[in-house]
Length: 410
Image 1 (tube, rainbow, N blue to C red):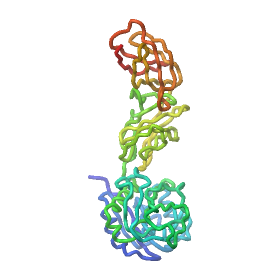
Image 2: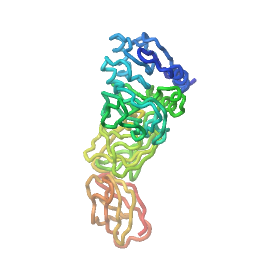
Image 3: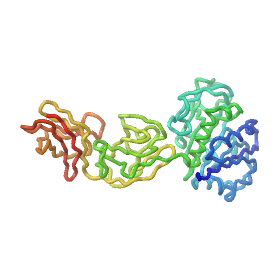
Image 4: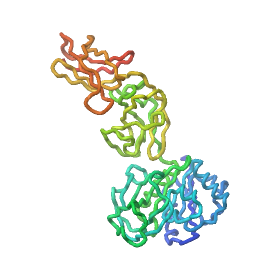
């Protein structure tokens, strides 16, 4: 037998303007995913600690000042803070104006809809599961909201209005910064919040792109999407792929599953987030050079110490794995011969000059230090020992740490 579906309470009570699309939205929400069971209700009395106990998420398409008691409001906030999901569509920000904590939780407060027309919308976060199916920019007809009490510092914006598609001087436009976010997520305590300003009319609710946005949002809200998981021996030296200890300041690779939400990206400048994912070493993000669902390459900080390492993506933070750090853990990427000099590209030297063995002979080291490339790449230049011919294995050793062997033709 499969796992029981997650349960979401869909509240469509209107204490203000009632949207005609509510009746269309209910069957749409209920058919979004076989793993999500949606219960629609107008009954606000269900919002209590006991009434929410059997649900994994709460979703509002409401309006006006809902008649919730202090106890009900506390139950709603605790439901989300305690680790459950809260979602809202369109007028879910056009409600509960006199309850500041609600506005803080959902991320903004409705401040008018200057436009009701076809507009162009830009995807701000193409890596989130709710938006990765969308084109970078798309057009849709809807009633477009603006907000007050909104800050990007509190939310992760997924979609925003392309202001070139509207008249920015239209009556009722209050924002002066040109930032008209339309869909976002945020963490709230241990829980998750999703909101989209779209959904005014039937045509939006019947739009396949909007339905996919909602389906993925519900799966994300209820924890149904897989979190990134590093394999048990998946923390390795990026050059040798040897598991075990890694060195401060070295390049490392992580292998596992769902390390990103499906995308791959390369960035030699080492951003702290790549393809929507971050790698946390003892709680702090490290620079990344490559990210894909199965592998991430990054650089440990020079002061890295023993602790733990985890990957965090839009679906959450995966299981932390132990991180063992030693002063040096050398690994060789490649070797180039330039006359009588071997240029050895490596990582994990820990700032030390290694012993270079060419075959069974120790070679003279002319240089050992930073290489030409990203931080964390080391270059060792060694003289080929006299009399060495044929194909030989080259290794590096620093203290007890020995690299992988790479063969080179002499």
